[in-house]
Length: 229
Image (cartoon, rainbow, N blue to C red; front, side, top):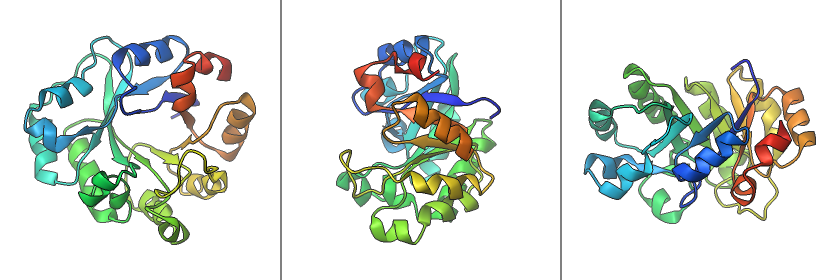
């Protein structure tokens, strides 16, 4: 990742093709679909398949939520990439209790061997595999640095680090102090969490981040990418 990337985040109920196209036309380097559960894709759930549709050639990563390796392999066996498809992004950040109960989202952060196997399955099918993650399921996991353990142990193409743990909400300030140690792993790190100004982009570049992901601010105003450039 030689250039600094500006990515439009996977936003549930928001990241539809029309908004992804708007963000791309305003300067987003790449966009992400909203999260799709692989278990539903394997069951051929129509609305879930619609979530990962890329109707126009807009650079798009498909975000998936999965814990079962066999389901992932079954899905990838029948998956056919559309023009614009860039790769898969594994969700390790969703803090929803319903998602956590299924062992998905933030619950996967400490399962480094499992995550590495999931990433490897995607890569063995010839696709890019990245991760979007939080700092842990809770403050305890953050203090134990499960996020750093995962980055060190997993060979993903890049890691989007949302600088909050799973119990924190949008009103809680993201902890940007973690980015320096994340970058020190030598992996490709994308920053995420309340990024809205050119000054922040300059700071992230100086730290060594390879890009920034914009979510809520882009939903409110897709032209933010042009301003940040």
